[in-house]
Image 1 (cartoon, rainbow, N blue to C red):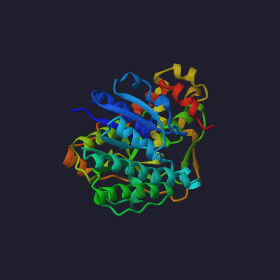
Image 2 (image 1 turned 60 degrees about the horizontal axis):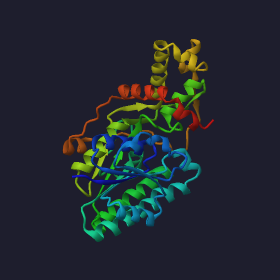
Image 3 (image 1 turned 60 degrees about the vertical axis):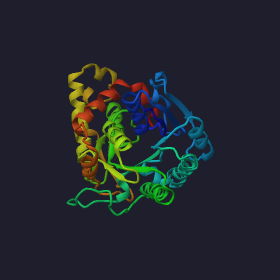
Image 4 (image 1 turned 120 degrees about the vertical axis):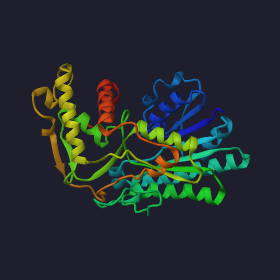
Length: 353
């Protein structure tokens, strides 16, 4: 039986990867990609999907309740997969208003539209909300990973706005009976990752011979998840998950930031040694001049509200839905590096400096 999906934030990093993944895995489904095309939303991320018979793109804001309602009705969509969000912590510190508008008000607008269309008609449906492990706050070095019933303790305007949206989704299930689910994921990486984030920022800076900024002592720890493994987890929640439930999706890959940057430097140095043409393409890269990429590492002042450690306990989704990531951090990183080296035309126009 085919489904009709509205994927919000579909031109962003994770949303675009999900759109490509879903089109491959479920070619019989209709998929409406919905995105406001703000700075991190890039129409080029969806290149190739135009040939998919069930795909269409709509430029729009998730706060536009009337437009979302129209799409759900006219296109007979029975599933919303909600990625759209402001997500960069540094930006939330300098300008929190946009995070409240998009992440809280926008999510509420989607919920209202879904309620008015789906509950009015009585048709089967699902509203799936993608959240983050940052809503749980910071973990001590020896603490177990975040689990689904963990107390929320957000420490930045970004994580506070995502926590608020999580609560709204839960409330619409318990109050109105809207069939919802939520997933809280760890840090994603992979193709189409906007260059302001740690891995693509360091990768593109290495290629241009720019400093690699590391906050504080570099020992802040994150659990990393290859983006396709995240998409696979969402697919399981949509197809097998229980309405009203929350599922944590993690990669079981805890790395300190300085370890990630150091590994990235070593991988880049190895690639330059294996592929001599890279020195011609990127003459400013340290490895093109016989210098280790790690020479670019530069410690900078820690940011405000910087959580020390995140880690996901993904035992619930593994136990109940059979989820297991298929990539280690190293194998996923190699796929990511190859993609960026093969797609300079995508990332070059997005560089902030």
